Length: 296
Length: 319
Image (cartoon, rainbow over all chains, first blue to last red; front, side, top):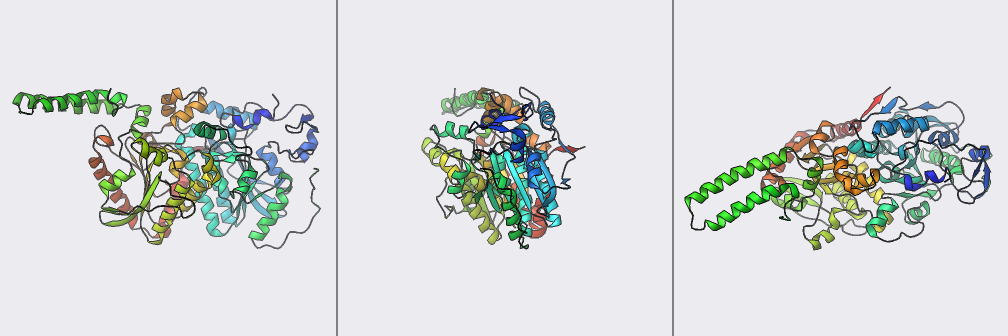
């Protein structure tokens, strides 16, 4: 099994995250077109296959580094750490799962929130770390998102969030469900202040995150072929007892059904989001620059 | 075994059956029999109290889904003077898994929205087992906005296994429908009191559950995932639902302790289903008290307080 298939959606809810998602060799094989790809080049291309355009999983920090301008970034809510309020235990203790995920990802929890600049203009951006317990939303994720939204509100900045998550974090019980209410309430405040929030839905975004902050962007942007939905495909299949149509719950399907505004290739998101924020904030157009044209 | 009673309620069913038998036999009224019935009644309340004092989280989960448990429309009939049910989301359909409309509670005009389950096979199917589709949440949103327009406090009753996980529901934007309600409820300019009357199943429950006060009936449950769903993910089998129920901390006392619900509404001996009128009367009293507590606030103060309330949800530490 390749390192990529280990990240595929069948494991979104149970990801223990005890492996670093970094291949050992310099060459990796594209999951879709099987092309052998040179790792440094793949990274420069934001983990999108230069041959076929397949969007591979990308870590939260790596994604945000590629999104912001180079330069200083301020982290929001960095000091927050999860606690085991329920003393939750299944085959493993929640506390142990957290420690394993922390070791594997180097993150304290599944959301990274940063303030930096995009094309010279300040923005707040968050990204889910899927390798941390399937990007699940518990108290720290909800709190960091709310702090990020409040930071944007206080400083009059736009907010963007890249989601990659299986939904609410079961091990925090109802505390995690309530993060849906908390994050949505924070977005309501941005709306009232006329500050734009763009939600970028990446593979996969399901459950409680999709049903709260994920679908609440002034604009919802899907990454190509991302799985986006409320219920996971397996749950739906078990409920309706039929095979699901091809392409069901993928970005293209959501676009067709009117659930998202547009689909944007990862390599073009920086340009696109910068231009949209400038328009929504009635700022002057961004100076033209040589764009990093996708290689495929 | 009496199918109207859960397994752990069977001792209660047996005593009740014996009382009924004696009643039947004592048509001619004999003093000795009356005495016997009185003894059995005492035994019944002692036994009920004993069973209900030590319920496991899984037993409470079963009570929350008890086939005889009062549903939203039962409370509307028992605790309210008037109710005018309104239908439809004005876009796609009417979803019978959510009911709502203007009502009168002790003379006051209020808007009521609640999940609705069915009792017999036909109505269960009609109500989709209390699992709403997007049009249900959009009907609820329409009624919430109407409540705001006419300055009516909003009362919601939560009782659902969860939002329906179906193909059509996904196509019509189940996630968006839920998310939208969370956002809109957080800034609705009228008092919002939410009550978990039975099962509070995840996002499908929360979609009508954001407000200023959350009440919970003593034997209701409120959870991020059903015990069965949790067990099948963590242990790969729904058989271990009772362990999952315990781990999830989904009972009223536990949630009060965690600060996630504000008040527990006590149920009659043996649970709400043993005495719906008494339950409805108590619920009415607590709803009126909750509304009284919120009625003096100007909309801005109400919303500021609501935001702070939502903002406090969570447990973490700062290094």
